Structures are given as C-alpha cells and as structure tokens.
Image (cartoon, rainbow over all chains, first blue to last red; front, top):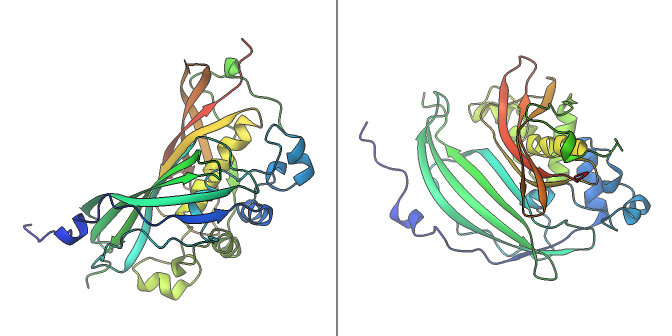
Length: 161
Length: 143
C-alpha cells in the first residue's frame, strides 16, 4: 500500500498561482449555438427582440456557458500546468456561482488558479487518479464579478494489464 | 414561457418538472463545437476504448448544462439561478434516455432574497443517479 504519492513538491508549488487573464466577448451567435447544442429553446438565448424586452434587456448566456466557453478574444494562457504522470482524463464535476447576468456584448476577463491537488484510487480500469481542483473568476467590462466556477479535473492511470 | 413561479408556492419535497433528453453522438459533436471541448472520448469510439472506457461517453459539462436548463426552465424569467453544481460519479452514454430531475430540500429568506435549495441529478434509463448535484435559486415572493 505504501505506494509513492503521484503529487510532487513541484506540483504543490503551483497551488494558488493565478493564470494570466483570458478575455472573452460574449456574442449572440455562440449563445444560440450553445442553446441549440443542448436543446434549450428558451427565447432569451435565441431571440434578440424578445430578449430586449425582458428584464435583462439583452440576450443572456445560458447557465454555465462562461465556464466552458473556450474561444477567447485574448488567450491568457492556461493556469500553471501540473505535469500529471497520467494522460487519460475525465471531468469530475463542475460548480457555478452566478453573481450577475452575463449578457451578449459583455467582455469578460477570466483568471484561473489551481486550488488543490488530491489523489485517489479508482475502480479497476481507472486505477490511480490525480485530482486537480481549479477555480475561475469571471469579471465583466465594469470590473464586476459575474460568475465563479470550480472544476474537478481527473487524470488517471487506466487499465494496468 | 411557463407561468411565473413564486417562492410562496414551493414546499420542501416539491419536484421540479423533469427534463428528458435522448442524446445521440451527433448531439455530442454539436456540443463539442459549441463548448470547445474536443476530447475524443466523446465522439471517437476507438479512442474512447483505448482509454479504458467501454465506448463514447457524454461530456460531463453537457450534463451540467442540462441541469442548468432544468433549473432555468423551472424558475422561469423572474427567477434567478444563484448557484449549482454536480459531480460526474457515473458515466452516461449516447442513445440512452437521460432524465434530469430535482426536488426542493429547503426554502428560506436571506436578506431580501427568497431562496430555494434543491437536490438535482441526472438519471439514466436504469434509474441510476449518475450525476448528483445541488442548486440554489431565488424566486419572487407574493409577500
């Protein structure tokens, strides 16, 4: 059982370091595509006229959209990279906190940091897992924090036979 | 849009209207394009098998997007999703019927906000809760 930890001191030294900010423009068309891809016909995500007359006065981003929206205007570079010994990966979970609506036309600035590293033994076929907890904060063009996300990324050993 | 949902009309145990999805690999590809997640386990069967999976699986973030839709449909335009999250405990596969469900576990007032806490989850066609989570929403009050 006394297997060596996959978490090295070098990896631990990356905890808490913030990424360079990435900048995203929230546009109508990606909102429509996102909603279309999940099968959500809510007119707030499709119909500009309708959305203008709503309390938001603009099309809004569906919940969770910013947290996965990976086509930045300005890529700030990824957060400090943890060199996992495992190449296979899975998403362990996502959490979103919405502080203000994100509207079409908003320019968001996101910074991500690694907040924790854990290791765990998965079922056979998964094997050892290295778990990375990342937090991202999104601010709008007025400097207001609009969304905070927390993601659990897993890399794992895979089948050992 | 459905009629407006009020905090006063919610009770602990109230069930959210379920959201049923019948995803295909085509939908997973659409999602890959919309979200920018192009990891091959979600559309390339040989690649998925090489990682130790039994085949293509549904993106975790797509399941969380459906849970966001579940909450959004329920609260309607006058409600607000404050936060939600889920864990991808079990894998889901295309061509299965996926149902997003939820139940109210708590309602309370904090400051000037009327809040409702829910247990939410994704269930496969065998009734297994593959993706448990929680949600917190604010609703208008008649008071």
